[in-house]
Amino acid sequence: MVATKSNVNVKIDTAVKEAATMLLDRMGIDQTTAIDMFYRQIIAERRLPFQPVVAPTLEEQLTVAIAKRNIPRVKLEADENGNAIVDKDKHPEIYDWAVNG
Image (cartoon, rainbow, N blue to C red):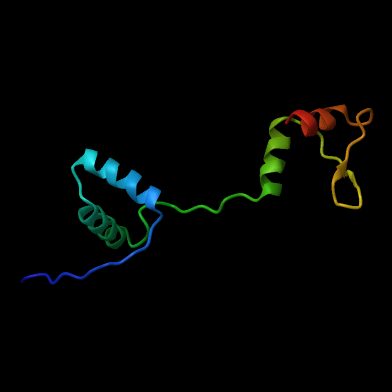
């Protein structure tokens, strides 16, 4: 039985294509073979061969950063523009984190 071939046309960022092509060349694999391998792996696993993750929101990133630095969670006041107001004397560790990161 002879397999029929089909084309796949995709638009991809030029820098991504060039970087991937360079790495594939070093592996001795052309783009067509790599894409064919990717599709076959999807079929074999019946899912993507990697686990996509949702990027954390800025609020989630800040929560993790605060937890790692053991900075106490306090309710801060905000100015009319929504910028946090941190009292340096009342919360020196938060002030230091806000200023120095």
